[in-house]
Image (spheres, rainbow, N blue to C red):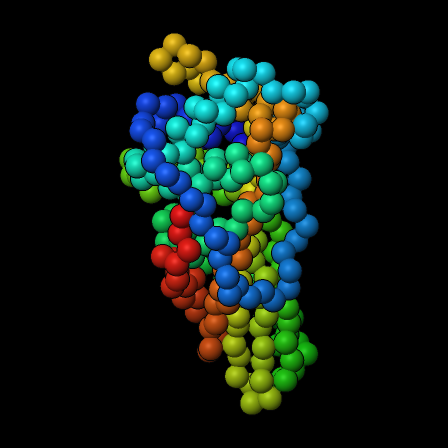
Length: 272
């Protein structure tokens, strides 16, 4: 989940420590997503990825201190929703749900909220579709060429990737931090020579905790080790974050022209 020196999840803990308690509910997974070729294999984490999380239930019985951290996290979830950090709150809430099941994201919402992500998807689709078209054109007509890209890291640089001057940008920063995305698609040349394109966008991340990171809140240290220990003692469970967009259809595809921006229709559906 964390690819640089700064842990956005820890910053979320710091930002929302003193907010108030309300009832919270995790949104259901997004339904109706379609795919072409499946995404590539899950990307490998970096050297320090998830070190503080350890193995679930490998750390013995929870201590009083562990249960106090759990209680603080529940307050943070509620406060996050009040403050507008709904994605960050939902991610932490799923961690405390202790199931370890995948959390499904609305990719259209991410592209709508993160303009640099949408632009990156457009550029990746542009280059990948053009390469697929070149292969298909060599075969003639009445042919299709499928493709799937490697995972691309959407990181913290440039700073505009997550506009922390806005609640929306900060929310995704605290929820996801750096994440990976990929595209699969298909270019088709009909018998009459008409060319079309369709593609989907995949997102992947790991919600876990690293080593040697943390913050101090009102004189109280909150470390990744503390948060990761909830996994080790079985009070929470790390998980994978995934998302699959709807199919983007380009009815008339011309490799010499710029692709339309990927669709964000449905970005308001299934938000947390």
